[in-house]
Image 1 (spheres, rainbow, N blue to C red):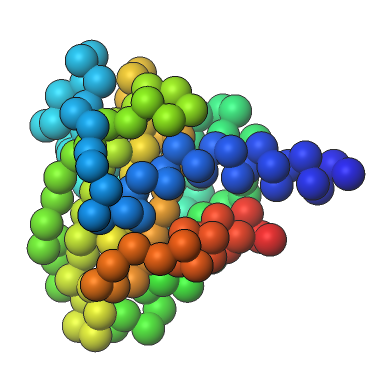
Image 2 (tube, rainbow, N blue to C red):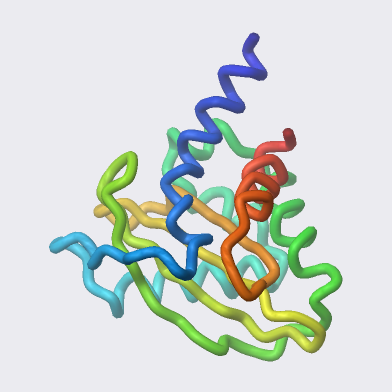
Length: 159
């Protein structure tokens, strides 16, 4: 029962990022209290930590209530499962931000990262106090897929 409750809470937390995987969806602007430059800078800092394998540091960046449902290993597994076969990291192809009011008002830094074999989309969600509340990663495909989103959810929370 405890595991089911943890998975449910974790899934709800990551549902905040559901809009991140859908490249074709209509997007909302950032919340009024957030600006694009700040969200992108915070997102790029965490992206660099992830790519450098600093999973403990990233784990500590999550807001306390979100962190309670994560482990360092779950963050590591998510990123490594999506980047392991993508090849060597080459750089950021595209970076932008969107807002969302799903769950709670938040901003999302979206990065399309070039690797030598495949492109990987990495999205980082921040609450209006700029605390990390969500993370998703996936090999970039030509369209959105429900299986990619559910794969990210189950990978992040060990399901």
